[in-house]
Image (cartoon, rainbow, N blue to C red; front, side, top):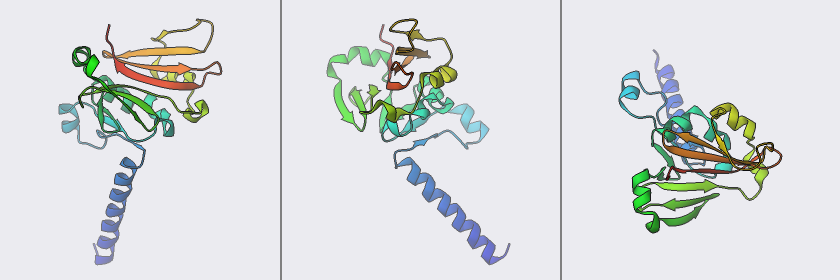
Length: 183
């Protein structure tokens, strides 16, 4: 390989690294478990995280990346591990600190997990329909509200953790809640 080709390839790799780091710190989603080798993926639990406004990319919360990270208890929202482990959340419910961050309301348990919800000021900002949610998660949900209306909260249990999507009368998701099952 000649000197020009080596410089060109090196520059391309450096540029790709800058864009990847920029995306992680710029309100975008990142799948921390992708592009790993098969051996390391098999030995480590699936991990994902989200930084920034949930209304920026609500579609992330219906991806396999999110679902696998969330159901394995390895999901981080704006630097906070979520969801809180059920036993810890039960024991420390009175100690939870409420934080408003971006478009989210977080109940933080001494930096050891959280229960959270996200609700933009304009419901249309989410740009996510309940049909998209049901297509991704399936029909095994519990729903509040009228059974004949699309409006209501659709809750899914992912390996002991709960995520709920609230829909308005048009079928637009207006709120996302994710938390431990404390029942």
